[in-house]
Amino acid sequence: MISVIGKYFLFLGSLFGKGEKLSVYWRRFMEESVSIGVSSIFIVAIVSTFIGAVSCIQTAYNLVSPIIPVSTVALIVRDMQILELAPTITCIVLAGKVGSNIASELGTMRITEQIDALEVMGINSSSYLVMPKVLAAMFTFPMLVILAAFLGIFGGYLAGTLTGVITERDYLYGIRDSFVPYNLFFMCVKPFVFGFLIATISSYQGFFTKGGALEVGKASTQAVTNSCISVLIADYLLAQLLL
Image 1 (cartoon, rainbow, N blue to C red):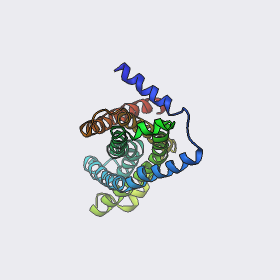
Image 2: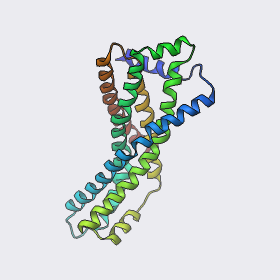
Image 3: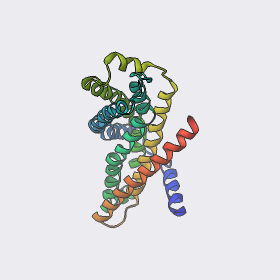
Image 4: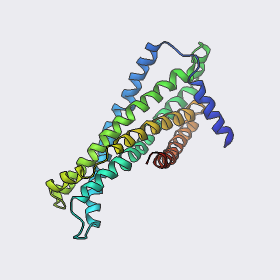
């Protein structure tokens, strides 16, 4: 276990070694941003909208006391989305989609000796292949989480008003009541950290793949598993440090 962690940190250090021209990295960064961010919008939108809708219905179902105002439903949905559901659940979904894709891509390049060919040409393969993915993940994940938070709150609004569990006026009042701006900062910090962890762990698993197609599949599975575990651990640590 200790040797694996040490190898992982050595791998991170190799990303900052001899690199290519900035224009090369910029082009690769834009390509990876489209691959990681833009292609994930649909799944993020679907998941976050329905999570917001379910959160609203279930919260209203449990708040049966006449003492508690109905607008509390919207307040709870808002805080759940901003503090936990939007950043954490979205990044776990992205760990499955993006992480497996990164690991399988690099694993295939390793077993087909494309990475070896880059190194023979004198290119820092880890920096050239991995660094743009890491930067793209850290750049696009916060934007996807902001979208997820908005759609989650909007999904709660649709579910609440269409089913009649809360009026439009009460919902709009609830999402503005007792709002803490610092929570938005906390929401944006989490996907920034999660993006780094998911991209680097998945790249590590794929970069050091050995064997054939079967090992690529195992590396992809391991990348998703390790990424999800690291996201949950980092989620707790960030909550402990920042809240």
